[in-house]
Length: 234
Length: 302
Image (cartoon, rainbow over all chains, first blue to last red; front, side, top):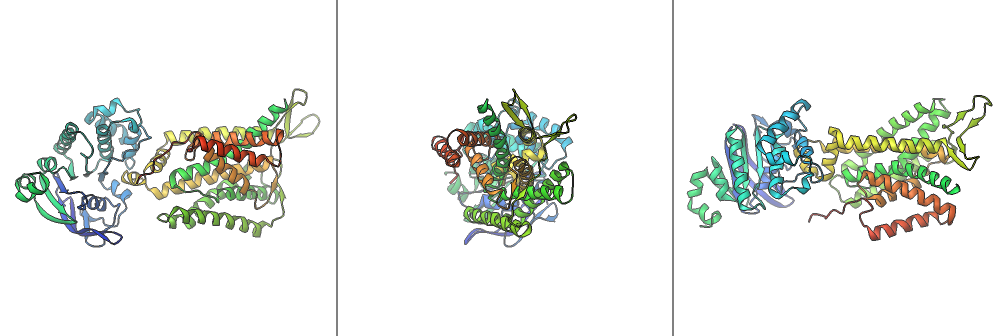
């Protein structure tokens, strides 16, 4: 088991945002958390990555309990998060952004890391000297993903990668996610676009107002009547 | 020729403002706070150098290095004790704490070193080999243009510091991490950057530069007392805002302009009103360019 989350409860002041959520991610899987806006998906992800704290339960990554470990430390343990809204460093160049992604890595691995990312995202190579603020939304998403890959993560967590992108770009991003997975990356994907997310995921969990209400293989959830009604517009 | 003299004096004073303004602007850029105790760190640096040379007889260069070491440590300790516990607090609480820290340093200095002014030694002199006369500057064009060594050293120090800092933030890993933190702390954490270490580092650099500024300031204006840092501190803060707070080239531009305007206003308009003129210029600039000369207007995220 790569990641195991057991019974986490997260609060924003008095608001109980995540209520007893448990889920698991196996090595080599794409696992998705889907749900409506405000269901607690991003909160769950930020708790795993160490930006938020759970009051109860445990988060086990690579066999070690990581609840309470800072976000910065988790990166060197192999956990990378592509945050919601991309959050690239807009005033820094594409290459500097990628270098920041490799902050925890020994300096000798930066150049090969850059080569790998540029191979995956040729657009970024073309724009390596440009500041990230001049990139389009799709390019910024690629940069955010490339930046996370620079830390050689064991688990790549993506928070709403399709947000604000044109449909053709959304497809491109999901193709890349599948490619990365075929290349060996384990992926935890949080998405509002349930259709796309479930069609690429091995397994999925449905979050509703802070609780997991359904789980199962991606294809099976796609066929589920309740899921269809609530998230797939059918 | 007198104009040229005034101009050089202005650039020299402005260089000191610029070096101090760097501390304000870097801390603001990364911790998003105004460290009003920064001016008083200058004063501490000047005192350390003063005692190193007058009481312990250390050569000036060692005195400066000692002042830099003490101020670096002081800056880091101030941040740890006074500001770090307030990381999640409102910006007003942090601002009031910074003002309190400023008074604390001034009063501690008064207690330790009394409020009697000390006369800072003249470091930058050259002894004439033939006559044995001690010169504090060079005289050009039959005495019409006087350049003090202190001014020359100050301007040179400012140039070197600016180049070093620009290289540091654009080329080094830590410098880039600082820029990343100043843009987006949560995203920087997700890169594995330790934000607390980065903030400490910023205070260390700013305070170390404050020590240099203290020595340079007192070399040109040698009266040293516990309030010595407060007015230059406020002027340098003004310079940082003038140039665009958060911007390193802005601190340089703001500092130099402020120094030149101040000296020219003193020379040609009115000595008493020179500060009023400086601030009037600031107000006009901010009315036209609210983010300062080189600042970028950042929209607050709601």
